[in-house]
Length: 378
Image (cartoon, rainbow, N blue to C red; front, side, top):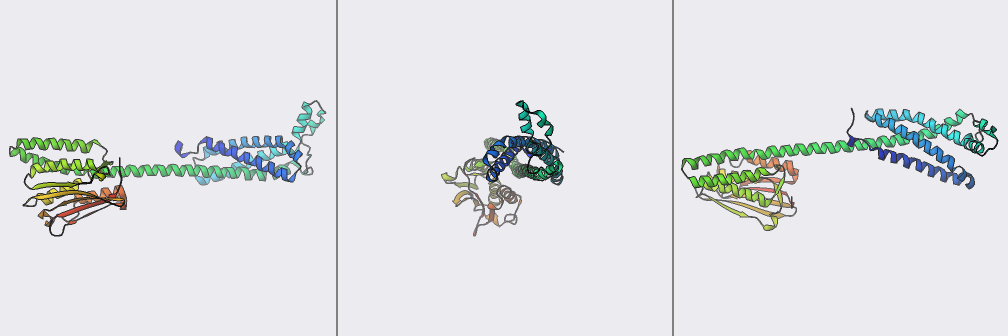
């Protein structure tokens, strides 16, 4: 199976590593020669060493092209392939090194080009170095050991780079999948709110129509349209400024005020400095809806719903509180769908950095308080 482009090492990186490897080889071997040999002899051998280096680099490019096709396999098979492919590459290096340095090839070719005695060309394989008593294959085998180290080392480095790129691509892909799953979860949780709210609102609207309260019904329809137009226009998984969240809750409470004109009062206390803080869209909606359903609808007197925001170091506290006597009802203190929805959304969005505390207020009423990390701007 072929890998995606983002999971493969780019060719320019591999070729750059080959160039850097053999440039380093050329520099180190030259410096070592200056230490152990005569300077004039070292300078005279620079051309020979440059030819060996270029041919070896070309051989390594061929090794790279073969390994590049093999890296679609498992890492273990790639290691075995690299170990095996380094053997012929090492013998190519050794053969070139022996031919250039030990046979006097360049000197004979130069002499021939200058019109000198051509009999030297027939002696290309005659050794003239300190290893003159060694058979050519023995000398080549000895150089191949060094060559194998060079090619195997680079191949291991190349495979590690490829493995690192592949791991990075897999991590990016996993992060993208986690983000997509989290977004899908946030969307699902967000849309749990709207059907329940719409059901209650339509019931209220039906009551107004049946009671022939035309103006109140028209006002509720207008507020309902504005609420859904605003709440559904953006990304359900995105954050919104607190000012926009408060505006949506005001629209909702205006709708409920038509239903409870004598029993619902609203108090909103939001410092100007916190209006730009970003919060999950409609995060307050289940809390405000619970306050209306359990606090206002279940109380006989006038109930005030208070929405407040306070700043703590690194966090913002959002509170929805009512002073209705419906807090003593059996269904109020428990973790109903609305409260579970808020907790799940906070956990999906912030993890353990956010929480919801919902409990009756001593004496009378009920309070739901959200603590979440503080952030500004979209």
